[in-house]
Image (cartoon, rainbow, N blue to C red; front, side):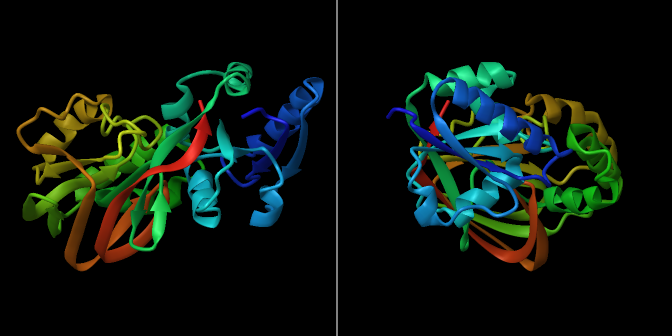
Length: 284
C-alpha cells in the first residue's frame, strides 16, 4: 500500500504545542518526496474527506489517538502516530525511542500491520484502562498539569499512595471471578502507561488478547516500597499481583469509580470490556 497522499491530523492542545511545528515539518518532508499532504488542526476532516487520502498521520498523545479511534472507529486507512502529548505511551509501544526523522523513515518504508483495540461499554480504547487508583491519579493530575508528562504522573501517584482507599470490586473473566478491594485494576492492550510505568511488559498489540493486571490491597509502606518495582515492570511475579490474559471481562462496583482510559477520565460502576482484534492498520 503505497503512500500517495497523507492527512496530517494535529492536536494543537496536546502536550506543549509541539504538534503545530511538527505538522509543518512533516509536510515539508513529504513535499520533498513528492507526496501530497493536508494539515488539519482545530477542525478535523469528515470521514468522507479522510477516506480520500491513502494514509492518515496523527500528532498527539494517548488522548489524541483515543479521540481519533472513537471518531473514526471504522477507519481502514494506514495510520501513523507522532509524539505530541505528555505521555505518548502508545507511540512508544509502536516506535520505541526513535526521534522524528527516524520514525518518519520507518513509516515511509514499512507496510501497514493490523493491531488490536478494546471496547469498554460504548467507547474504544487502544492503550490502557485503569479502575479506581489509576482514575484518582488522573484526577489529581488536573492540579499539577503544568508539570506534565511522566514527572507529573509520578508526583500524582506518590500523592495518591498516601490517601487512596481501595473499593471492593467484582471482576469476572471468561473463566475466573474475583471480589476484593484492589489497589490496581488495569486492563491494557499495550505495555506502558503514565509516561513510563511498565504495567504489562509482555503485552502485544496484535495477539487478540488484553492483559489484565490486578494488585491486591497493600498497606502504605508496601505501596511505597514496591512503587519502583511496579514502575520498572518487574511486579508480575509478586504474590499480591494477579496477571491474566483475557478477551472479555466485566468489572462492577457498588459506587461509581474514576476510570482512566488512554489518559481520559470518566466515571462508571459497571464496565463491559472486550478486545477488538485487528481493528486498525498502523505503519510501524
